[in-house]
Amino acid sequence: MKINIDIDANHDETQITIQAKEWTRELEEIVNVIKKEKQQRLFGMDEDQTVLLEPKEIDFIHAEKRKIYAVSKDWRFELRMKLYEVEEFLAPHGFMRFSKSVIGNLHRIEKFEASFNGNLCVYFQSGNKEYITRKYVSAIKEKLMQGGQ
Image 1 (spheres, helix red, strand yellow):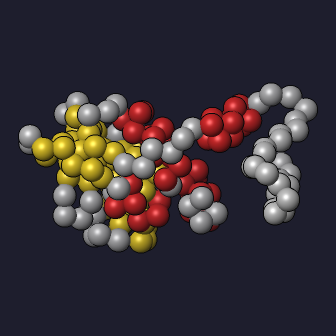
Image 2 (cartoon, rainbow, N blue to C red):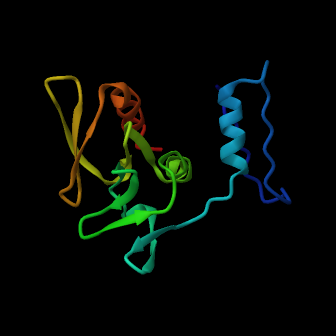
C-alpha cells in the first residue's frame, strides 16, 4: 500500500482519495476509521454514580461474570456495553484484543514476558498485569513494533 499526503496552505479542506484495483476488507476498515467520529470518553458505573473515563487512563477492559469492567491502577468501573462494542470504540485509542475476555491498552504496556505455553504476560505502567493468549500474540507484537499506532 502506498500513501501520499499533500500538505499545502492552498487547500480549502481535507480531501481523501483512495485508488485501488478492487474493494477489499482492508479498504472497508480504512473507510470506517475515517468516517467514525471519535467519541472521547466512556461511562463507568460506580454503584449509583456514573464516572467519565478517559481511554488513555485505562489499562485494560475485561469480562467477568457477564459484566464488563474497565481497570486502572486505583479503580475498576463497570461498563454498560458489550465487550465487542468496547473493542470497536477503543480501537482508535490504541486498544487491542488480548484474549476472548480482555482488551488491553497498548500505550500503557511497560513490559511483557513469554510464558511456557506461548502466551504473553503483560505488565502495565500501573503495576497491573494481564495475559495475551497465543491467538493474539503475533498481531500485538507487530502493532507494538509499529509504536502502537
